[in-house]
Image (tube, rainbow, N blue to C red; front, top):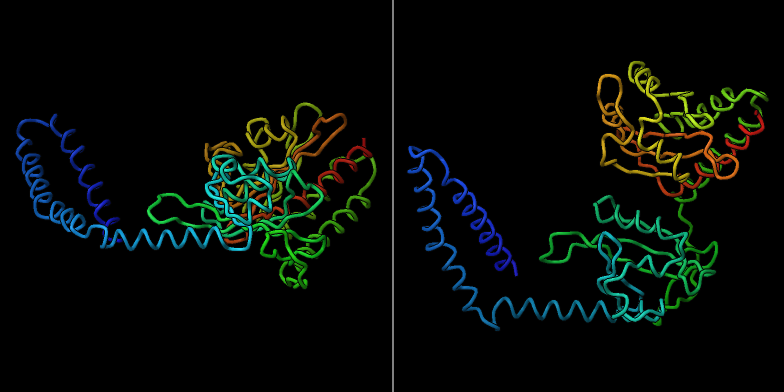
Length: 381
């Protein structure tokens, strides 16, 4: 297989170089001899390298490397189908490519029907966006992930989905291997049996997960205390206190925009020593920040890790993208809900440098705190 892949790469490179030579026919006449020399060199390469390599691969026949690779692939396919855990192979768009026997029994969906359809279509609506986001992150090489989802056919039963990056041989893109495990509430170690339905197991506490959860609960408690202690009738004081709680311990940057209808920038807190950058962000018009504008329109939280669009938070007065200037590695943009589905403000949080990216659990905690902040703002009206 390695020899076949190497030959394929050599052939692809040759085809690309031939295309370049064809495009070079339009060069001035005095430069054509150089192009002709290159064309002759490529012909020699075909005669002396590519053609002998093709003959060697052809001579190997069914008893050569190709046959061994086919046998290996057949063995791997059999193992995939017979492994007792429900396993699904999806692409970066969560579209099912393969589903083993245990997964068909577990989900109640035939493999032939599932193939080519998004796996999210078999999940509860509330879990689909989170699953798509995590699968895309795994496919981008941002590390393996795990989250709890619910199948449409049994929405009351939580299912632990573990997502692992997998690079199939001979394919240019990374796929995602999804392992499904039914869990009991409060017992994430519930493991599947041979039928894929699961059997109770002993809970193994995760110290790191417990520590992160405790830190989030502590943050929510500090936020609630700060909001309840803020002076009544002063909306700016409420936001200042909320931003102060989040700044440093939860985010490197905190940007608050509030207003009924037209937003204005209320508070900007950034890293120490970044006074010029903080002033530039404070001078922005919130409506010129696409993320803020989208949060106002859609009313939903946005979580981005390594933002692809440098202009997602607009540009400062010098024309530099804010996300680039602030070295943002992950962000949360959270609307503050108002009455009748309206949005009365937006909080945007940045993390920069080597700080870990925002997680889904942190986004959920921030969504909870945003509702508390919005309620406190309503009391101050």
